[in-house]
Image 1 (tube, rainbow, N blue to C red):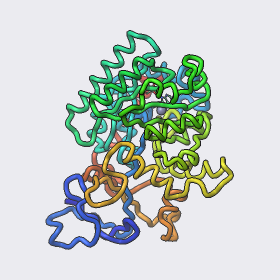
Image 2 (cartoon, rainbow, N blue to C red):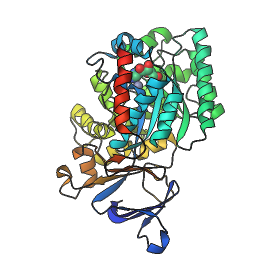
Image 3 (cartoon, rainbow, N blue to C red):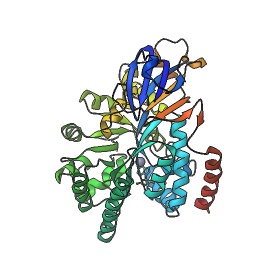
Length: 420
Ligand SMILES: O=c1[nH]cnc2c1ncn2[C@@H]1O[C@H](CO)[C@@H](O)[C@H]1O
Ligand SMILES: [Zn+2]
């Protein structure tokens, strides 16, 4: 058991008792209830639910800074995909550890990933102590042979991850996007999602160029095209980006309960555009937040995404009342948990013990009133303690699960291989 004592949580100072991987009690915990629990003094701290990053390509930490200031298609075709051809399990493993360190240090406890070499990713996630949904990124480029291979790979990885029997690591399906995946592949993804009961994680409507490509090929906008063959039926979908949407497409998103992963920083950096978040909120569509990979962000600090999502739409809509602080905070917590169907994103009895503690003795967190406002508009993301699945992963700024120095050294080594 772990007892976080006298911490500011859910609006007042109280204790949090953790048993196994769950929150057992929030309130006043008496001595006789705690046995020989590890005690964490929370007096100077606030406790928040661990953040949930719903769109990552985690090993891309190693691509940080390699191809800045380019549009999506040029970025992918001329820089990222050629470098990705050099990846292997070892490179991906170290890149993932680097990403996990970064996420833990900035208060993220769960991420939803789409990438390659999932054995390396899963090994790193397991060691780091983080919670993750891992999807193999399927790309067939409309080639039948590739399609068969991608479907086999995706199914193989679902089984591989399920067989790990790790309650923190779950499989997902990751068809890359409608402009890189054939209709036949997407139909098979829908079947596999139902067969294995796993979520689908896909890039949708990120840029005008790609929408044009889909329209030229099919005559339809991406959501309408996918809906025409039942892609969204009876499955849980997390659609990343959704920057350019027609009203008809928004209707489909609402009707099919599609979860949006809003990635404002990646969309700004690649000049993809600004997603119509206030409009989607008006339709009660579930908005979550993602960083995307470090090639297009260039970090994994979800607090930056919270702040940008809260201010961007105000500026673009000339309306300071849209995306309120609490809404933005919920994007990164409650709503992410809903999209991934996990009992997290809130600190409540019976919920997963994914908890982040922040020392409030920081100049930018005074005066100690309006805490949610501070977390959204003033905080930089450097958190102090992180508990995931009931395990202390970081304590007073020290990560307990991985050897950070070793990871930094290896990250440089792996980067040398990628750029050679
Ligand atoms: O913003 C993005 N849009 C489209 N593709 C992306 C983006 N970020 C990364 N990838 C690419 O998605 C594949 C993983 O399945 C990788 O090839 C990665 O480089
Ligand atoms: Zn992406």
